[in-house]
Image (cartoon, rainbow, N blue to C red; front, top):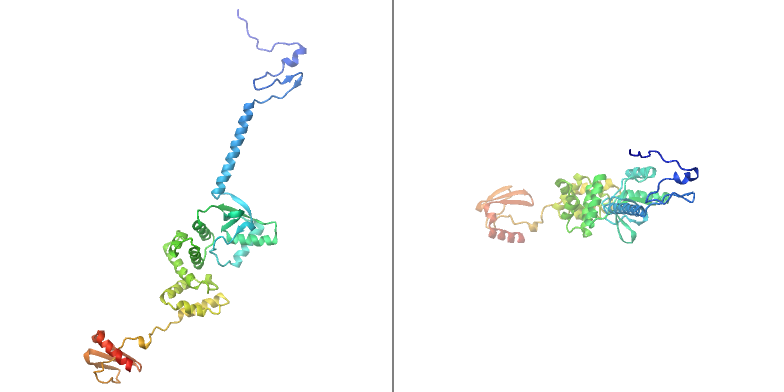
Length: 353
């Protein structure tokens, strides 16, 4: 008959109970009891190596994620206000509405900066402002009240060139706060002057590529105003779309229009209403278009005909009709007037008359 295996622990003497009831040891543990003293288990060296490797990999992943976020412009940083150069780009905004700025200041004082500005890294730890000019200006004003508020939340962008930086500035303002047509045209001109684009047309197409063709055409009209009058207009953002297009058309149609406008704006008007009125008066005035008498083509009767009659209309030989419009104006009509010899003959007559 086979023996059954014992299913219960064997009885041991009392003096050996401590050793007998101690937990079983494993290869990864030192004896828990030694010399009657409890000792904590010791981890195997491979466990420490695995833990260190996992921690290192996690830190590397976090560092790479932060580096990618920074390089891709997804990381918001707190930058000192004094390292940000507001004039890195020629700003497209000329005027700031006082009421809008007051609202912005109130919001920043009470709630802090909610939207980050955009900058690009320069040399020596400085940053050039791409977008957020109004926020930066407001933050610096608040800093004068509370020197401890000396930082701005910013996203560091890495534009490939200046053209991308200008485009980012324009698009940010187009989305957030609409610019006047004059301000849009002015940034086109300034970008060309700085060599970012070779021509006004290329700058216009690049900076406002998302705008419709009619809108780009209107901005192009204001570009001509900026080129001609930027140094003489005190309140250019007050030009409405309609008045600006009329002014651009007048500048194109009449070569002397620019000089007339500059004269009308001298001395410089002190208010926007006065400047608008001065421009309207120049556009409403009709310039003298009559050419000097010496420049006119001769239109007088042939010397071989009878003396000119005092009647208002007289038929002359060779099918020529003479009409008297006023005491100093006579009009000749007829096919003979197209003859060059006829014209030369009467030019000599006018010279001696």
